[in-house]
Amino acid sequence: MEEKVTHAIQDEYPDDFSWCYGCGRLNEAGHHFRTGWQGDKTVTIYTPKPEHMALPGFVYGGLIASLIDCHGTGSAALMLHRKNGHEPGEGAEPPRFVTASLHVNFIKPTPHGAPLKAIGTVSEIHPKKYKVETEVFANDELCASGEVIAVVMPSTFLKK
Image (cartoon, rainbow, N blue to C red):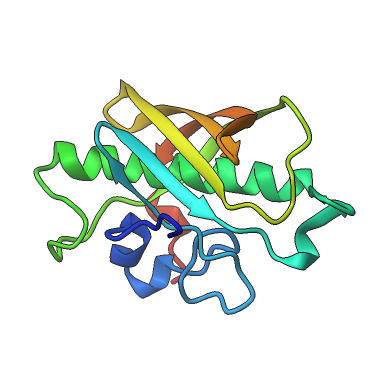
């Protein structure tokens, strides 16, 4: 049985903030990454599609970078949402984050056909700035790692 995220922070984002190619639930062409809690860690699980191939048998690195990026901003939103006294599924609108910095390490070729599991550790740098360290596994093997510095989305990002 494949693991899945039951209560994802992305499910709580208002429609105006749900268009990201990586994690936006309203972007029909997007990946629809979903990030939730797994104990004190964050988790995103995603199975690459055939078009996410780099070479036969291996996942395109850009997809892995996108996974780490959206996992990072979703993880930061989870952490601040929890700090504010809320959890996904309770109906409270969570904060929305954007990426200030993204660093990806490709540790070994990532096999295509297996679910990818991103596991994150979140630490607060500033009340509106979080660091998320992520490891990406395929078949329980570490394939990539990364770090995202995520900041609370400025109000100037809203379309007026």
